[in-house]
Length: 407
Image (cartoon, one colour):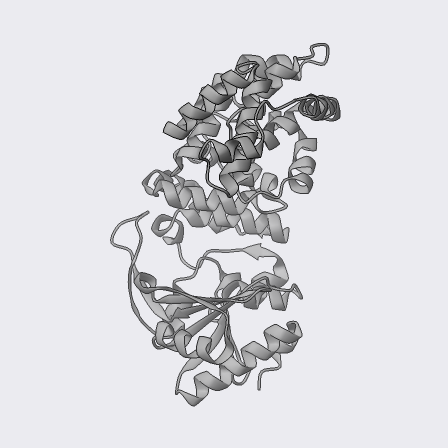
C-alpha cells in the first residue's frame, strides 16, 4: 500500500487507501496528481485531493461515493467528478489528452493515459503523479528538481499561448510558494500576454478570485504588473499607490465569499487615476456585482469627503450610503472609515436603538402578511424608511406597507 499517503491526515489517508483498493479491484489505474503531489513533497497539507483515473472517472466516482459516502457532483463535459466531505474534497479526473484549436480557447478533450494527462499540465512542479497502489512517483518533466531549486517552469514554449490564464497562475504560485520564475518561462510570458484578450470574462474572473483568496494575493498582482500583464486584467490601476495596511485588514477581517469584489473596489479606489476605469474590467459580473461597482462611482464625492480626517458625515448620510445595498458595500465602507469606524458604528447602533416602530409584528399579521421571515424583513425595511426620514407616523407606515404588499 501507499506510504506516500502517510503524509496526509488520518481521514484523508484512510479514504485514499480505500480508493486505491477499489480502483485495483475494478481494474483501474489511479494516481495522485498535480498540486496535491507538489504540496506533499513540500511537507504542506493539501486542502483537497486530486486524482487521475485511466478510464471513466464518472463511473468510478459513482461507485466510490456509494462505498465512502460524501456528496457527489459530476461534470460530464470535462469527464470529471468531485466528492465532498465536511473537511475536504476529492477531485476525480479521467486521464485525458487536450488539443487547442486556437490560442486562448478551451481545448478539445479525449481520453488518454497518465502520460498524456501530465503533458497537458501547466508547470513542471504540477506535472507529477504518484501511483496509489505502490507509491511510485512519475516525474517526466523534472518537477522534483524545480521544487528543489524553487522554480516555476512551463512544460513547453506554447503553454501560455494555449492557455493564457497560466500566466495568472504563475504569479499566484510564485507568491504562495515564494519561488522564482525560470528565465525562459518569463520570456514566454512577455510573448503570450496579448492572448489574454482572447480569454473569456468568466475565466478571467475565476482566476482573479483565486488570487484574491491567496494571502499573497497582492504580491501576485504586483508580479503581474511588473510583467506588463495587469492591464489585461485590471486596466487603469497602479499598484504602487496601494495602502499596504489595507491588505492586513483585508486578509484578517473579510470572510465573505465575494471578498474578491471588495478587493477589486479597494484597488480601484486607491490606485486608479480614473475611478470609472473599474467599469472596463472584463469579468462576467452578476447584477449584484455591477450594483457594487456603480455604487462606488455614483458615491465618489461623498466617499471622498468621508476619508478626510477633519470632516464628519451625518448619520443620515452614512445610512443613505448603505441603504438597500449588498453586504460587500458595507464591508468596503467599514474599511474606508478607518479610524472613524468605531465612532460611526456606535452612532448607527444608538440611532437604531432610539427608533420606535409605528407598526409591530402583530400589526403586520393583521394586515395580511403571512407568518414567517417576511415579517422580520418588512420590519427591518420599515426601520430603514424611518431612519431616512421618509416615514414619521403610523398612517404613513400603513400606506407604505400597503404599497409593499401590492408589489
